[in-house]
Image (tube, rainbow, N blue to C red; front, side, top):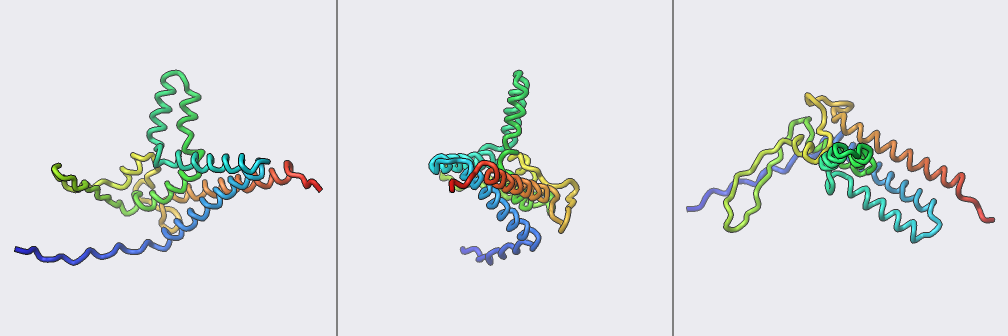
Length: 200
């Protein structure tokens, strides 16, 4: 006996214009910050190979501490353990590592918009079909729980929004990206102004 065919689920609605605008703005700012920092490294290094090496290390560093490979919650636990063992300065330095990655701010902004408390989205986690293993039903996990697990800010209490009804945490991340961009551009200007001279 055949079971009736169910119609395919409707496609998800397109993102709201403010969320799409915030994503585009954050993506542009993250790219500009990376460009500014790489430009500052290129200006400061006389050797092109040294500049390429330092630029690659900057990119790897930013992605390492962006919150997905080494998450903030793990670094905070490591910092607390170091502080309890007598290395308070080293523990504080370990806890501050995500703040030194501009990609952390960009990813936090994107994930807060997707999984934050506004709208209280639920994420369905389903088990992969593995032959010979029991199948468990899907688990519904709140989005803020996933953000807490990864160490990201989980939005605003009480589902409050800031300008354009977007999470205040996302706006804070955008402001941090703007500050990163200003610092990168200022570094380029200062390096060109005081450390580069025309040989002619």
